[in-house]
Image 1: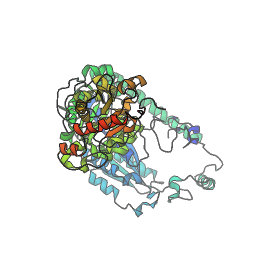
Image 2: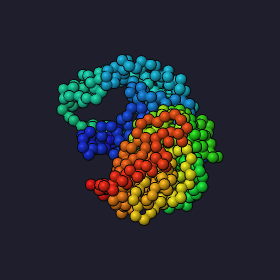
Image 3: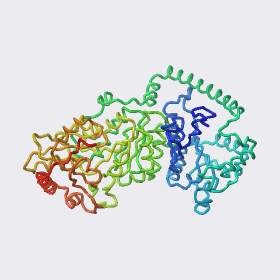
Image 4: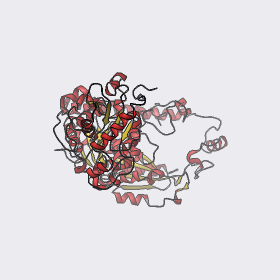
Length: 595
């Protein structure tokens, strides 16, 4: 379609399918071809993204449409497979869509009943339309979608008339229809051989000796389709110009959402730079989120049923729901994976300033991970708030203490992982995440109190890492993140030699700094001790020894858990002395200048 309809892809592009440097990758990739709406491949993501696109469209229509000028009237169309219908993320997103009555969403389900292992009835026999009706969808079935084109047309006409419900159109098809291997798994992922290609071409009246040939009649037909489309685009552009003239203030706000030109200079004007609250960073995150909501009209999102715990409520904002589509707070319910895939869909709408935020407990981030990974691949600007960041959760025990999760997230390319130490760093981290390169930003936030730190710096945190306590001729550097920066400062006070203390709220941003700046943070030939209430994996790049948690946690009051793992000033001081003593006998390995 991207060849015959829009000519975004050439015949030569199609010939290079799955080849090195090709636009036509093995799975559709938005960053390679922006005309591809969303990056799919991981099953269940596409239909869930479609729900996000529907949410974005509903919000924009409610916020900006006027009785006399309707600028957002589009439907969202999605094609889903048997595999999509088996995935859990699809069920979460479809349940959300039905509850929300997203009536601008129409999904075609290609029910060909074949997946890689065989016919779907070896593992999947549920009545999908019945399930969708239970979700609150309107369903339509076309019994023979191989040849009943009138039936497909009638289904579309019916779908367009449905109000207050999303629509699922079941298309009963035959995979590889007309080929020698129709209705078998062989045609699922294996190209037809020359003989099979020749046979199917003969069957449908094509020249078996021609390859990558499009009949001129097809090009001519789609030229007419393009002409009609261009006319509609011109009509819309005229309407939008009228909107700009008649509603200049709304037009200005909408343009800011479309362009999303977030600059550090602009953020410096409104982001808070106070550092006065001795509360968990999840609390100060909530304060900053509300400042952002007042200044960024395209900020929209919510929590997976943890609003009071994640501190994500937006003061004075309405909740997005049927009849209140201009609400900017979304109740996702306990659907973490669906929530994140929906957020991706909101960003895929293409408006750079339409920034979704999501939230849950840090220990549940792995429910979000497949969608976070795609967001990183596609450089989607998103805010992901993960609270209750460590063994500081205390009594909830090891099931809720995410000791391994920071290392897992930091392993992902093209993502910011922030763990701020206090109120000021929280504000700086949000600023860095939203004004830097477009990519997901993850905020790992504490339930335990994070007191204001002497030496804390907004500008320093913008660099990803900086010196909180500077000394002359240090014998040791202690580096920490989050609430362990305060632990590092307390430890430094107990030691009999000069100690420099560093906060490293975002390794990814720190890594982009100059060698000279890094050397000012970590002086040459000085051993470095890292302190973080998480596993040591990954810290070897920044320190010579790590004090943390390399086993699962335990259930007890938070202070007892910290004491158990040696994350108290006296115990960390012992490790610090051992490290300094060790490197008094051996050369200190280089951390900044590496190949």
